[in-house]
Image (cartoon, rainbow over all chains, first blue to last red; front, side, top):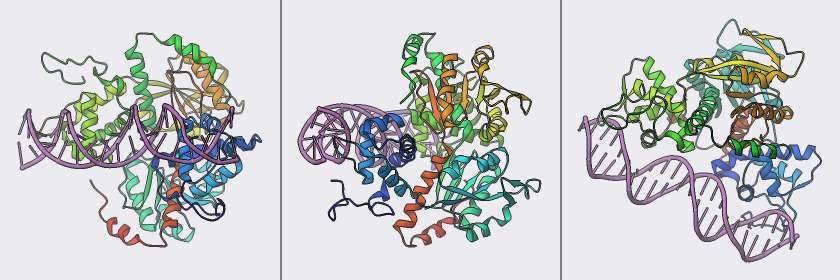
Length: 247
Length: 247
DNA sequence: GTTTGTGAAATATTTCACAGCG
DNA sequence: CGCTGTGAAATATTTCACAAAC
């Protein structure tokens, strides 16, 4: 068996499994996908799922899925599959989603405002409790019941309101300054939408999302598709096209 | 043009270098970062940059940067570094950014509206020329001079208006249908913000951005930081903290 | 002297393929 | 039987380290 060797049987303690501390980064990236697919299955009333089916729903290879789960310490039943509800709860525990996290968004231009109103955050356990901007024209504005505050008040709010995640949606030029404020206030998880690399101390996790970068990567593929082939291979595309739809 | 052709051999044709077709995916992901950093340097009046400096500005190892560039076919000067302007032009060529791409956004809820107004797209060569939604309450609305059309008109618009990239910002339930419409209309590059896996035929490139997933990954790190250590190691964090800022 | 370009080593990640459990 | 769990093989990616170019 994996590790956890102990007592009579694999009763998973509420918090998180003993092992989960140093999962491969690639595995961690996939866990939220698994969780989402499990949620869909659960809503559909499915109680058990095979690695093959769950892998198809998340776009990965089934062996990789099994390996990911076994590294987590989760377990299925041979010949049967995984219990959907139990597995979802287990993954949620590993991801630390058993209680909601409190999030601040800094920078309320178009993107920041959209993020502040994005329902997917609260649906998945992230409470947006603070909105901050430096622009007097934006400070004081009300977004879905939350008032935008002066970024000068950020540090205190982080401490007083238990904010653990900062989302930076400012222009690139302001992003490093905001990151410094967040770090000084004790935030160790940052999601950065500004198009720049942030310097932060060891121990602070930063994830970067750059929307234009995604388009540029698509542009690369587009460019080399039309470049590499005059027009061929379109047949194969059309042929496969009817295989999609439904899991 | 791209390489500033040198004499007899390796005259790179305007479009892209001879080699660029099958770059490692990891390299392609980094090219937009390099390009952005080069743009910043260029604006600052810098003419030449070493792999060490450019790597620092993009958060990668300098050897990897050099390997990436040499795989592209780009070249620097030993003892000197890379010409900023030439390298930027070269990478832009490889990414197919020499001419603007035409983009449609489907789904104009909060996120879609923010994307439609996001200045970073047009700044980096992506023209948003079509906005589509299925909601009669949104169709007809005007966003920064572009009118939102009925999604039923999508296929024709793709063909008539030379749209090559589709951005899906609908709820998950509608995303696969929209993807099918796009694919049927001939779009082969899709950026998907909906929280679901899209099935598309071979030859269609899909990139997925799920904002909640990013927060969940941060949650994992946060969870296992506070879990693994009662409170230690904060000293090291604070010590390093003053090393940031400025490259 | 500095910095590129790159083999070779080290890691990380994915896939195969099958023993073994339920 | 079908399906999990996992060694071992295959790939992919990153880092090291140094010779060659300027």
